Length: 59
Image 1 (cartoon, rainbow, N blue to C red):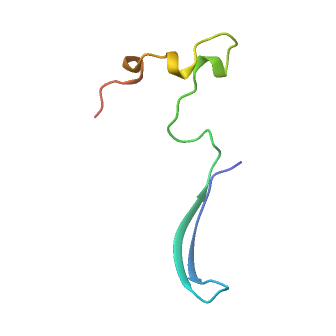
Image 2 (cartoon, rainbow, N blue to C red):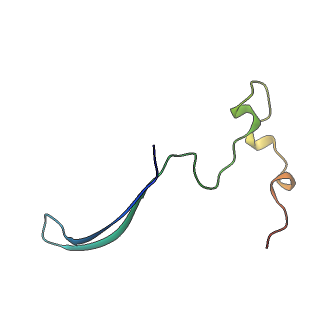
């Protein structure tokens, strides 16, 4: 599914003014974690990954 972005500005069919940004993206976009078991049978699950392995220095 491709990323889609748009805006709506106007009056709804019910007669109310409405303004909003809309976006649609695949569930695997953005910030998330895929545990090794997601790709390899028998590997660790997300709850088995030490939190220290998921942090680092930031700008």
